[in-house]
Length: 281
Ligand code: NAP
Image 1 (cartoon, helix red, strand yellow):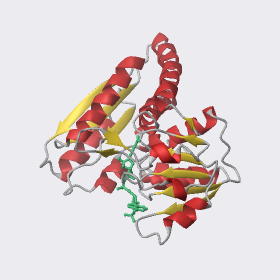
Image 2: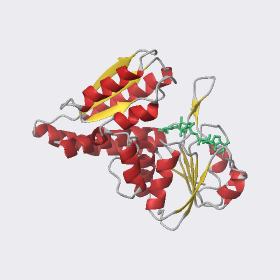
Image 3: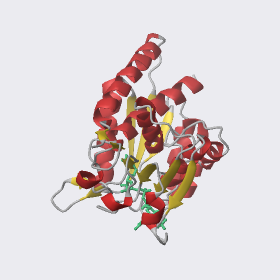
Image 4: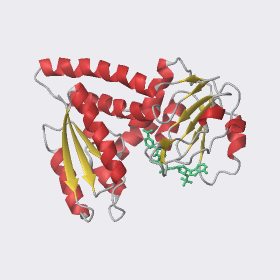
């Protein structure tokens, strides 16, 4: 039976450590500050922003929220980013995704000052990670790595399969694993035989958003299984990509949804804001 990696518990530990950092900064008269941009009325985004607000309050980070309407034009968004880039009080800028489809999210991310890019989505930060000189690492993959460290899960020399190739989760996750000396396979919706790839994996990381995609008969005995996927079901509950009850019988470690990678993502955002603040000031 797998050991369950409790992301909620670990995130509390990380947040307590980070609060010590903000307390020290405050003794020097410095309060880290995050600016969050929300475009439109996506209900899930509002929940994510609320959770970030709670974490910021808990550890003493100022958070400013900027709302743009659903029909905001590109220049409004880019002008807002520019003004936050130039605002000396703002350490980190976060553009909450998704944004309405008429706006070019890649262009918006590339406009964020790399030194304030606490999500790590600016092409400069993505490139630095790809070249093994990371500055800001995207929060979700960073949270997964912290889970590995806390549980002494070694990555070097392991066969890892990342399911999903998005710029914000799958690709940076794979980059980190490559940098750490793993042999990495990245699967996507066109992958011919997912099961064959998974059965060869010592570590499986799923970032798709499809319930029960990862089944027990796809997992090698003793593999580590990390579930990043989040799907909101009709009854309002959320679930991951992994058939948790059955996969936990063959895995050595497994993360639940909820209470796994999600809370770690927020903790790592707080980590990146403090890093940005220290670097800048
Ligand atoms: P995304 O942009 O939609 O990417 C999903 C990826 O899954 C794509 O690369 C897609 O392949 C691949 N895929 C789809 N169906 C597949 C299949 N049957 N077999 C293999 N691969 C398949 O989503 P994302 O932003 O990366 O997020 C992924 C999931 O993680 C979502 O559920 C999201 O809600 C969740 N998430 C969780 C956290 C957290 O903190 N826990 C943070 C961020 C995201 P193609 O590229 O070929 O289409």
